[in-house]
Length: 353
Image (cartoon, rainbow, N blue to C red):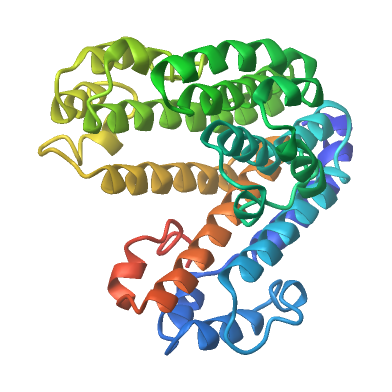
């Protein structure tokens, strides 16, 4: 272990491991699930460490939109704070990762313009972000066409979006535009991970690469369920492969969802997909299996060599899964769903004891 690496990451990893100790454990999620309704669930959440400070002023019957905005805003602040503890390319990677919600906002703007959704309606779904902020996106929407907003996006993204708009018009769907944004963001993030050195490169590439692989496999599964032609399917995949090899190409060529799942089960992600390939799986079942797999992979990083940016990235990924789980509980309570049904939709339940 080099002295320089210990100096760069000793403080950071100590702080991140301390933060990890505050992640909601199974007993915490059980407490939320046992609440009578969404109001009691929110009260219980506010009594837990790291949440009370982010839920001020939300009293009485909670608005899901207000709760979600508060939680996601706290996450954006958390990523920025943790990134400030790092140096050099590690900081650049984390800062760029923190643009995730910004690109989701950009996709929302593109969808609103393409589908002629009103500015007020689209504004309800804008997320807190360090890029493509609410104010920036609201300023884009009245322009009326995708061509008019292109000068407001990164220069390297303008041409892919212009090409995607042609495909979107021909196909009558916004999917090519959304894919252009996802492909740009994830390919850039992957390039940054590969530019790191030593253990930073290994663990960051592993976590980001597996996320991209999973996204591509889920795209194939959804496409088979929706009978999307394979030519269109290929155009919707992220242009990065980490562990996926020929099995992805074979799954694209598969005639049925079950055949695609069976083919994917023969590859590097077999232990996840093999549990699903004995029958034609539901898309939600596949999504949950992959999300839990990714959460487990992030958790495993904490049992590895400690001094690298992958540990920071793993914690932030787990925190985002936790926020998603909290949101699922609040929605479940709002809709009056059973605790068992909600529990089955939680990614981190049973992982953190």
